Length: 391
Ligand code: OSB
Ligand code: MG
Image (cartoon, rainbow, N blue to C red; front, side, top):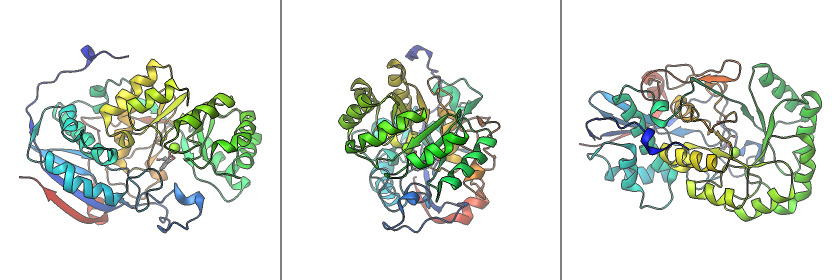
């Protein structure tokens, strides 16, 4: 684990903060699913939660820092936070406590809102934007300030539930051909053995995982025992988001490693899950855990347990995607992440730099901060509301 002594201790002047807070329609490539609880399960986690975004836009002395929330669009289907709760928290609670004040480190700004319970996705927006602003002010890539060393990070793809086994094999083949280093299939009760066995028949050697987004219970143990035969690298979040105990029971009863996503909101959650052997792999999403500092603590705790981590995705625009890539340069991100090419998601991104993989490697955007610049024309086009707070 990295000691505090190796952390950079930059000398910078404190930032008086202003904030420009956008509510924007994400310029999605596929038509978004209708936001209705009746939508088919296969669409729930593939395209729903992306209609709006709000890069918090902190600026000082000509510099700006950017972040993006990863909360659900309308319905809280991933965890509890939605765009509406995030906007309300930022506007009424979190931003008023930081706007107009000065901070000289990301930890200092995060500490102000730490006493408030939950709402980590909303808190992460401020913390992440400050990391970007801070690292830009130091003319240093965010990855370096976080302690990362890589110039590019390995990535895989997350593929939504397809209408048939043939369609699954076809979409997997297309992404294998593009060089992605891991294929993750979304599964749901009754739709796991069929797609996984179909893909395995054609691709016996690819690194493959499945993600259930909490769709099962411990009563489905037989199904998970059957999945053991397919050599999956791990099974992601099979059980309820708030149930570490049954994950531990399930992990003890099968061979395949479990990976926790929704269940882990903090380094403390990670420590407890690994201590109880509820998983052997951890998915880190910086928005889910409240920011980069906590994400790094989760990374460090997992390393202490010899548990590999990887960087998850939330169908982000180029801003969230760039944050993810910088975070994934830390040493214990030893499995491919979900930050695949932006062109898979967007016709036009809100950043100027194309974030595209080459042979399954995503280059770290070069330059200070998160290394991307806003495409203001695209942002303008998709913006529905702008709220400006600050002196
Ligand atoms: O569970 O990892 C997940 C997308 C939205 C919400 C939750 C998840 C996902 C993905 C897609 O799996 C990741 C991506 O491609 O950005
Ligand atoms: Mg997941």
